[in-house]
Amino acid sequence: MGFFSLDKKSRLGVDIGTASIKVVELSKEANRFTLLNYGMVELGAGQDKAQPSNHDIAMGIKAILQSAQIKTKDVVASIPSFPTFATTITLPYLSEEEIAKAMPFEARKYVPVPLSEVQLDWAIVNVRKDQKGQIMPKTSATTVDVFLVAVPKQEVARYQAIMKEAELNLRALELENFALIRSLIGNDLSPIVIINIGGRSTSILIVENGFQRASHDYEIGGFEITKSIAKSLGISVARAEELKRSQGIKDVDTNTVRQAMSSLIDLMVLEVNKTIHNYEDQQKSKIAKILLVGGLANMPDFQAYFSQKLGREVALGNPLARAVVPPGVERFRAELNSTFVVAVGLAMREL
Image (cartoon, rainbow, N blue to C red; front, side):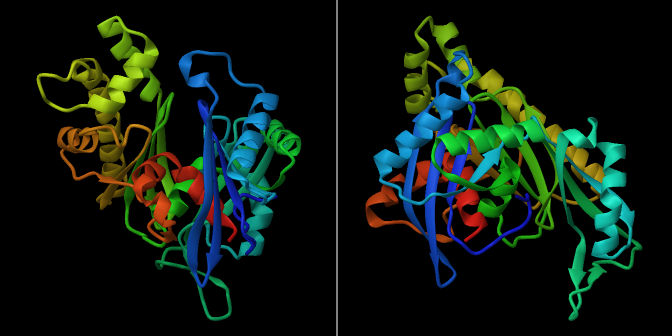
């Protein structure tokens, strides 16, 4: 089971988050994806409850499959970035075979735990291939960039156990960021920022030439904003969530939650701004596009507010741009685009 290898069989994408499980089933015909099924179940971890057990997660997945009447058994699942290690390293220009031999030795310099405890994978970032399939640098430089991933073996074993209990075949594990890149960016090689606002944290990902070049996780997400509203107004968390979704950040007198939300969102914008400026200064590369996904993306006026505070144009991500959506589901496209973005990318992986 690798983190970069692909095959052509169709898959389920299963995104196991801290607060929910999301499942997407795609088919592919004539180079076109079709959305067949999707489903989600809340885990409750985002509301200060105990972290769900492997059994709870497996039962949640089975509940989605039963409710959506999904029969497919082969699965690509996401693994969050926080227990993993990923970096880009620069090596002398070598053949793929020589790089493969060198990687275990090079990885020891960067991976902060014994290599016996992790599963390694890597991909060459800045190369093209000649007519004989031999790698060639994209520039005249004598080095190549290699993206290195190390995933703890205990995490791999955990996901294997979950899928076994859910009676599914885990064909691949993939970092969330890889799925985001596939579903949102496709073949676009320009420098792009993806802002993924989850329940408990916000991921800021910079992609160039189709690969992750920088990332930053910020420990404020949708639930922190909900708690701020609840505390400010003296209401329940459930009621605060309702108001957040209905009123959003609209600048009107009747909006009772804007003030409680704005300070946290402004801090989020500050983190994004710092990450972008650091990358542009270090790489001498101008960000071409900023995409916003996650649970808050469709909140009233959130996109416009975020863009105005950042001082840059911000677009909503569209992971289903390359997919056919059944007519009855079309009205849910905006929610699907923001909430199921990782699951869509996972399902696209091995089609």
